[in-house]
Length: 461
Image (cartoon, rainbow, N blue to C red; front, side, top):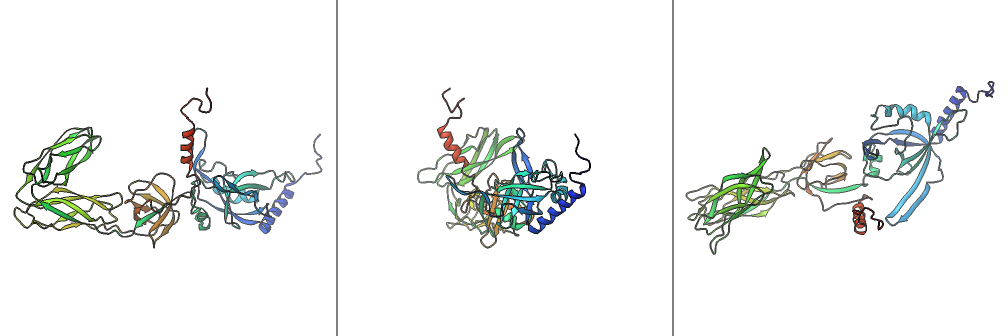
């Protein structure tokens, strides 16, 4: 039998009145929270598991705190992994307010980033200003109260304290973004503000190899070959050299051979042998000078700081005939210092005193100021991270990493600020506050107990 037609069971006007009363009560007795929708960046294609997500939008919304007498949940628990905070929060928000003031903005987002825009979603965040805390929506109850006058008017959001898992936060609200300033894999990088110069001294001698001539560059090398030079006579100094390889048209060959020590005391031209590296056909010869003094080695007295490219090295002109100028090449370490000077031509005509060695300036001067939460990118590694804090007084840059590593000596450039500084040290002030940082250790311990290569590692069959 049909319902009595003379009783409306809730007319549109009555439903409208209830919704407006609820909206007014929330504005009077509620708390202004910030609703932060989760946007999906990448999903695992097989089971649609979320691999990474971001929070880069925010909406102010009035909400009534159901748990008015304090946080619910299990509270603070002591576990084998430390103190675990299990606070929970339940809030009620207006269905109409969400659909009118938040859903239209979410509708404009890509379906891959925001799959459901018409209602609050599990996984979204609520910033609770009274406790300065972020809560994650775990369940959205849309039928409580249960169809008053034939309609639902509110959403009840059951939330748990948010546990950070390296998501990207860029809401443009500092008080929210800084809640997680020290969460995740945090790395403190010491940066150069101004590079310092390097210095070196040269030693001279006779009976040395002036220069190595590459007669055949060979081909097919998969690694750097070894250069062997015949030993010097008794009382002399053995010469040493290294090969420099290059790849052209997918063929790796030797581009040059540089002396690391020109030797001393040679009376006959030594033999040079090139071996190893997987290549063939390389050959080299050299010439010696016995009657004049040349540069046989360099000693680094100050490696300097802040070098990103190899600076030129200048050696003073020899005063005596035949006055052949010496030339050399600097090698920059990963830390941005001069680690070695290799001889291209040892020259001739130097006096017993050492010539003057001048190394080009490091001249790495940092510029600009990094912005909080901007993306920085390494010039060599290509690694990206987000700025957590920049201290211009100490030149320490705190960043949040997701994967990979930065290299000492590379330049970090801010995407928005344009600030650029060179990394001086990547490991001295390393601060890890990621609660998942011990996962690899747990896995290694498990592998030592259980052989997962077996078909059934938990039994005998």
